[in-house]
Image 1 (spheres, rainbow, N blue to C red):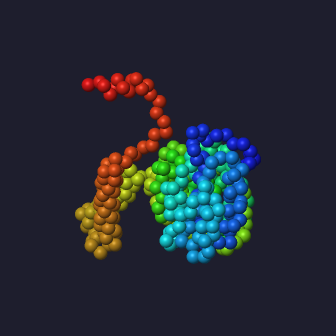
Image 2: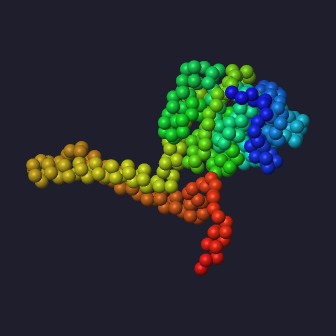
Image 3: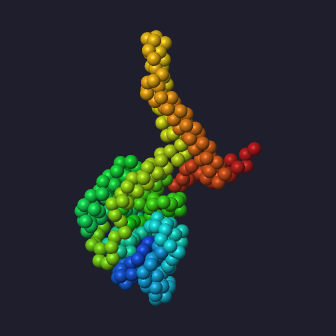
Amino acid sequence: MPDAGAALPPIAATDALAVSVVVPLYNEEESIPALQTQLTAALAALNRPFEIIVVDDGSRDNSFALLRAWQAQDPAHVRVVRFRRNFGQTAAFAAGFSRARGAVIVTIDADLQNDPADIGLLLAKIAEGYDVVSGWRVQRQDAALSRRLPSHIANALISRVTGVALHDYGCSLKAYRREVLQNVKLYGELHRFIPAIASWMGTEVAEIPVNHRARQFGRSKYNLSRTFRVILDLITVRFLLGYATRPLHVFGGIGLAMGALGTAIGFYLTYLKLVLGQSIGSRPLLLLAVLLVMLGVQMMSIGLLGEMTMRTYYETQDKPIFVIREVLENHATEQEAKQAP
């Protein structure tokens, strides 16, 4: 791997501010002094204009006082955003992204398990032409049963469902080109799925090994219950990636399948009644046929309502259903086309 402190190829020569680092933080008063020292030193070694945006996600300890002191010591580079209460990591990332001014935006945790020295490696990979670079904690310093095993299962599932194969979706150490995040809207707990969501726009995603350190202070905010929330979020992401602009295809497909099965059962019962003369009034199969047909109609109706909602959403906001990377054209031809009757 390249040396993080080595000279890096330029990202964009015209960018006044090259790198923005977004740091979500919640009750990390013990980690802040070391974070300040290590992060500032790592960014200064890159010899690029940078800013650090720390988002205090409603900390109840002494974190904000320490952040205030940090910002006062280095007002040229440090900006602090303080939430009124704890809104979660996704909201913290969204707040940081909305205020970031750099050509490349880097995210990193405040608990010092991510190594700030690895930021240079991410930027070097971005400079190769990638739009998103994700860190891969190859040698994780976490409990095997409660953290690493659920994470391994979740990463495999997310990669399979989204089609974007990453070993470590949960690593907060990531780098994004600014234009990628400008087209990504975050809510819920979707921050870990940004590479998958960005893939809809045709972004180039890479993954590189990064250092991972044992937690020195405090305790982890993650537990096994988050694994189940990840699965629910994954369903949302899969729908957004595959059916956001055509909801009838998923709801209508389910509705057609249910309606067809209910209809088939109904024909079978009709055959038993009219041809074989059997009684079908007390058969549970009759109730199942009626239920399936009704559910099929309901699912079709939900799909049609979804189609109307999405059309209203896109048309009223004039929101495009595509993202253009670049346009190659003859400007003289374009002017002639505009002047043509």
